[in-house]
Image (cartoon, rainbow, N blue to C red; front, side, top):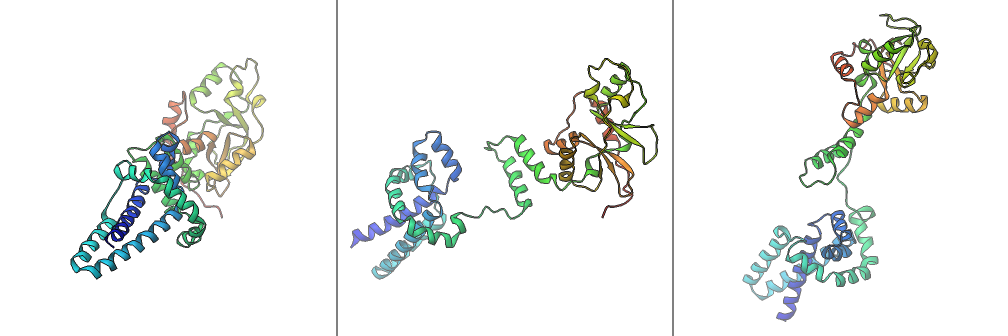
Length: 332
């Protein structure tokens, strides 16, 4: 009888060790180590891959063996029952076993046997596992966007993180992308460089536009301080590079102009860029007054979290010094 009692005790201990070992390393990390050729991880992954079914089976076996130990010990003597209860409680609640220690080696040694047992019992255990977790997987802990942002922030502080900080930053910015409006990231009107349609094309103009830091420019009939300038088209700096002919700005400018309201989201702005095949949108308020311009670079900067510029230092300082004019109204 003592031999049977010892076997039950060992069965409980084994359930606790296997459970703790397999939960000491995330499944994705265990899989990565297995693919890297680590033999212990390969053995542990064979059984860890059963997921919730394995947990349910270990909990059932551990509970049954613990109950048998408690009843058996109580019938034998009170001091044995006390010792057994203390050991069971310590193992179940406080004991920790890692995959890299002796417990991991013991678990890996019996992995083939555990895998065979799990393969045989999995069809019966899986429906029971589904009661504890739909689809047989645990909850991610993410309920809304805020939770995911906190997860990315925690990952960026993780010392052993193998995700590049730049990738985490882009993912974080992408989640906040749709919350920003055009008015928050546009270049305000006072910092916009207008080009007059009758202005002659030459080295002086090209050099001036290049130094401004813009890549595209609103073309107007005449430069004015009016809140509703007559915009005739868009001039791209790329069309002037290498151009050796003569003429005026209106000869090289694209005639179509695209507008967007300052209260639109950046998602709507990005959709507008893709549909219009333009790199510049003229921003207007609820009264159809021009309040600034939005470029594709402005949108990409919100995703990258940094400025996109080459020789644009002067433009950046000018843009940073300019503040967005007060909004005259809101769109419905």
